[in-house]
Amino acid sequence: MSHKIAVMAGDGIGREVMPEGLRVLKIAAERFGIALDFKHFDFASCDYYREHGKMLPDDWRDTLGGFDALFYGAVGWPDTVPDHVSLWGSLLQFRRGFDQYINLRPCRSMPGIKSPLADRQPGDIDFYVVRENTEGEYSSIGGRMFEGTEREVVIQETVMSRIGIDRVLKYAFELAARRPRHKLTSATKSNGISITMPYWDERVAAMARTYPDVTVDKFHIDILAANFVLHPDWFDVVVGSNLFGDILSDLGPACTGTIGVAPSANINPEGHFPSLFEPVHGSAPDIAGRGIANPIGQIWSGAMMLEHLGHEDAGRAIVDAIEAVLAAGPQQAPLTPDLKGKGSTEALGKAIAEKLAG
Ligand code: NAI
Ligand code: MG
Image (tube, rainbow, N blue to C red; front, top):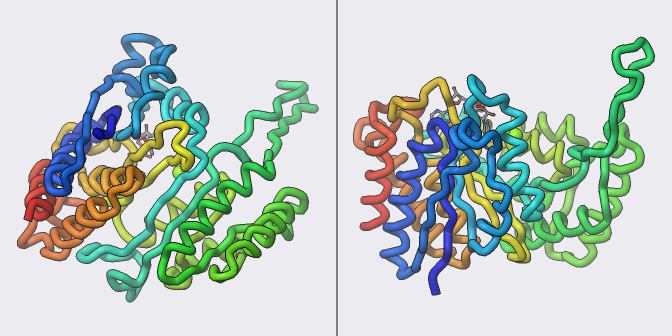
């Protein structure tokens, strides 16, 4: 049985790192006997928008709904399409329309990448941020009144549902239960946000009773952010609402080094809809077209996709190959300039593919 993968490279460096992501996936598929069936689409890009006046065709749900996974590059070309148009018209449609209620980001210090935090070594930081991806603070309930007058009022409501909280918590607890440390940290702010956040805490406490083997702690978001910087080694699985998770899932990878290596997954765990895998970084217009973008975020996202599709060994092998090439350093391996090397996107992708092939 083959896995059907929809490939959307998007804009800017998305188009440069995607071929390297595919190169490594093809090698992994050969080595582990996995059948991958790729189909390429040009929508969810600003070029498509310029031609069609929209980011996606009207029938995108039917077109993509039958795929097993979506492999995405990056979206955005602010010179021609405003960022809120390109992002809301593409990625956020997928997240909501395909109920990808988990946003998962590994935060892991890698060999050869210097953490901006002093005295942190590879292996010191190794945790996951699990972000609620569909509700919470990012709601469309609210509005403006008395616009343009002195009485101007704006309101945007936070929406938290029992279903919405419990399902993200369940995912995070399951993940923590599978990991060696069995530890879960909840991001809260129940002192200041006195209605929704105490409710979030209640649901965490209720869920914790079904996972007696998982050690649970919680921090208010302000000190939690500080502790990401001061004590990143404390964390194993960190779960947060849409807003808190958004902030933590940028801060976490930032604490481990370059944004070019960080991967992410937008997951519909039940598999009712395809999940989407993409690097954390954007389309990087400042370096686009020069062939120097780091492809590791894209390649690692491919590893997460294989794990999601049930091929944990293949995913693990890709991450091992990435680590081995990084460990070789900029003298021995064609690392890209963000990693202090002189390699190109393609050369680094090839080096990882060769390492994986063995
Ligand atoms: P960005 O992530 O594209 O770039 C930030 C900085 O990191 C730039 O200096 C860039 O050169 C560098 N960088 C990013 N990826 C790199 C890589 N693989 N290798 C080496 N250096 C890399 O974020 P920015 O500049 O805020 O946004 C640019 C565009 O990307 C905007 O249109 C924005 O909306 C979009 N964007 C899209 C995202 C997505 O598709 N998920 C996420 C973030 C931004
Ligand atoms: Mg973000």
